[in-house]
Length: 128
Image (cartoon, rainbow, N blue to C red; front, side, top):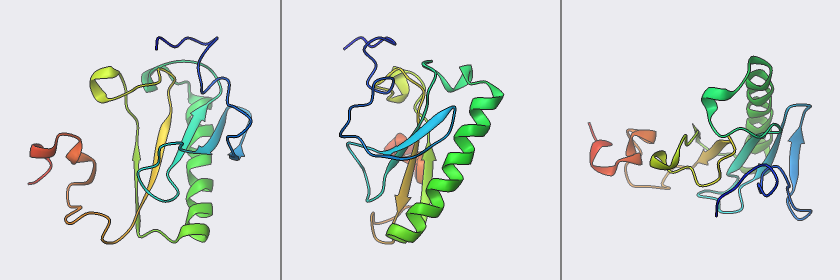
């Protein structure tokens, strides 16, 4: 689907989406398709597609929420680590063209060898 501000699912969150926390410029929700228990999205309120379009105030608001969400997830799920990621552009896997940040709790044993972390977006390049 070709999304724009009028039909963007992140601009128009449905009522069944739990807002974990929010501020004037961003909000945090659980991912509808989580890769781990507690996987969250931090979504700026303004509609723009790329991280490289974020302004300083939005950047600070997003990272304030990332810190708060980490505290919430630590208490609720006790993960052993985190990956924080942003997909920018279709070639990088972005499916909704509204900038958003993934906060992915990681747990011991959730994969055989987690060494390399986000480097595994290209599996054969992840090991070093």
